[in-house]
Each structure stands twice: as C-alpha cells, then as structure tokens.
Figure 1 (tube, rainbow, N blue to C red):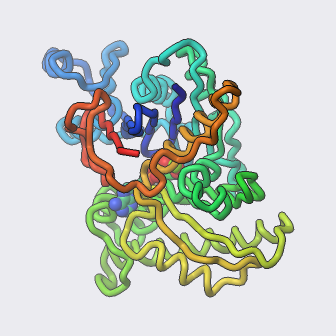
Figure 2 (cartoon, protein in one colour):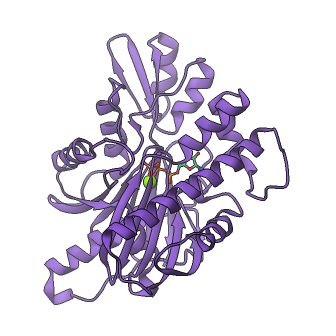
Amino acid sequence: MAKGLDVGTMNIISGKQDDNDTVFVQQRNSFVEIEHSDMAEQMLSRSDVLHIRKDDKVYVVGDDALNFANIFKQETRRPMQRGILSNDEKSAIPMIKLIIEQVAGEPDYPGEKIHFSTPADPIDSDLSTLYHQKTCESFLADMGYEPEPINEGMAVIYSELADNNFTGLGVSFGAGMTNICLAYYAVPVMTFSIARGGDWVDEQAARATGKPVDKVTSIKEDDFELDFKTDVGGVEGALAIYYENLLDYVIENIAREVDEEDVEEGLDVPVVVTGGTSSPDGFEKLFEDHLDESSLPFSVSGVTRADEPLYSVARGSLVAARSEEDRDKPQKSKPVKSSNSNGKGSKQASSNGNSSKGKTSKGKSSKQSSKKQSQ
Ligand SMILES: Nc1ncnc2c1ncn2[C@@H]1O[C@H](COP(=O)(O)OP(=O)(O)OP(=O)(O)O)[C@@H](O)[C@H]1O
Ligand SMILES: [Mg+2]
C-alpha cells in the first residue's frame, strides 16, 4: 500500500487506504519547550504525549503542545513558516522530523511509496522551497519509504476534480501559503504559490485591532462567518477585511500568471477551494463573486469548496501515490480515483478501526488524531 502526506505549516496529515476506507492521521505542526523537572517527567512518562528530552529541556510536540503551553505559560513554536521550514527556528528540523515520523508511521514494507506535498515557489517572495523539499524527502527515505514530492495545488486537483477529468483550477488556502494549480486532463498548465494564507490574515487583523494573534486565530476558527453583517470595528470585522484582501490578491496573481502562461482563451473552468483558511461560511461565495468581477481570460463554471478542507491535500497525495504504485504493477493497471471525492458518509474512527477519540475536521485538540472514511 502507498501513502500520502500533507506537510503543512499548521497541520501534518497522512492518508492511507484501508480496504474501502481512507485513514487519516494528523498532528499540529508545533511544539513547546519546557524546563525538565521531575513533575514534567512523571506527567509525560505516564502519558502517550509526543515528546523528546534534550539536556535540561523537554519538547512537547504536535497537538499536545498547545495544552502544555497553556499549563506552563509558554508560547508554542512552529517548525515551518510561510509553507516551508522556518530558518529562524533552530529546533525546526528535529521537531518536524518527529512529527513526520509519528504521522507517517513505519512503512509497511521497505520502499513503500509515499507522496508528500510541497508548495510551488512563491511568486511574491524570494523564498525557495528546494531545501524544505529535500529535507522532508531525506527524513522519509531514512524511514525506509520511497518518497516523491507532489505539488500541493496538483494534489487538490487529484483529490477534488476526479469527476471532471482532473481538469480545473484548484486553490489550497493554507496557514502559511496559498497554492494554485490549473490542470488540464491531469497535466498542470500553471502552478504557483503566494506567501500569504491564514497566518497573514491573523497577523494583519491582530495588528489592526491591537489583539494578540492567538486570540484572533481562535475567534476566526470558532464560528467566524464571511457575511459582512457584524462587528464593524471588532476582530471579526477586521478578519473579513483581510480575508477579502487575500482573495483579491490571489485573483490578481492568477490573472497575471494566466496571462504569462498564455493559457488557451475561452476555457470554462471549475474552481475548487480547499485548505483550513477556506473553512468559514461564505468563503466560496465571496471568492466566486470576486472572480466574476475580475478580468480573467477564462470563464469560471462555478466555485465549490472541498467537503473536508483539511484533508484534501493528504487525499490527493495518496491518489497520486496509489496511481504510481499501480503503474509499477501493470497487471493491475486500472485507474485509481479519489477514494472519497465527495466526502459523504465520513465517520470518525481510530487508525485501527475502533471507534474514535480522534478529532473533528474543525480540529479540537487531541493526541494522535486519526480519522477513517468510507469510500
Ligand atoms: N474553522 C476555521 N475557520 C477559519 N480558519 C480556519 C479554520 N480551521 C482552520 N483554519 C485555518 O486554516 C489554516 C490551516 O489550514 P491548513 O491545515 O490547510 O494549512 P497548512 O496546510 O498547514 O498550511 P500551508 O499549506 O500553508 O503550509 C490556519 O490558518 C487555521 O487558522
Ligand atoms: Mg496546506
């Protein structure tokens, strides 16, 4: 069996096929450093909290980091920033390595294929994604996998546009980045990223209102809607303003890139939006309205949001990995479709198939979150 892995700025998620189900395992891509003490040692050794000890420090990693940060009055830290490994976080490498190992798990056999998502180089900053990509690749190879990078936008196409011959525009609105891919019969015509996403919205709204970023993020993730009816002057009002600004910025860049790529005129293209930042009610309507008002050289047949925005990229990476696995076994060369592209009939379950204490798509904190879906 092959696996898919979404290496995101906020969430790292693996997907694998288990009979007719897709099983997802998820951890928050963050950690907290606490002083080593006998009490901490005791608490941690009695639990299955993901942690490592180094000298007189203990690092609690993944979903539990936030709980420990609150208890020990510390800030959580992140191995990644703006879609790639952070260059001003000295502990980034060992922390993300631990999370990837836990989320991907051991390969079922040496050389098992795993497709992992990487962003396209951003067009609005001079960040390069190569170091990030090669580092993730080497972690996975050391674990015994045969890793293959997959562009994050292309993973969205594989996951969400199987019913449209893998043709359309996929946009993944993440935490650190927004990844865009226009594909025609599964061939990418245009892929790029911009170095703005949910984190940027949070930072801007926090700056505008003078509230802490963490507070703004939790208001946004709680029950914020893009209805533009409430809270002028408050946090929700500021969030709405920067959400709208992000969408316009994305559309502006799509128009510019499409022009440069010389995309065939007169195309009628379905658009799928996904990623955690696309979660608020009203998001796809707002995107569609702004696309309608823009002057793109192709027409948009409609905008839909993935049923489960947090899982699209892991699912698409899995589809790609399974397709390639199938190609390597010509006797079984039937086309592999997305396991559950409409996400219907999903249920919560642990990775071993027992009923779940895993997390919902909205992401309440839990230790190792896993989720299983019927095909
Ligand atoms: N219900 C929600 N409403 C609004 N925003 C949300 C919600 N849930 C999560 N988010 C936001 O979605 C982002 C995380 O989404 P996602 O997991 O798709 O990103 P990522 O893949 O980790 O990041 P990237 O692709 O940029 O590296 C964060 O900015 C988070 O605050
Ligand atoms: Mg992402």
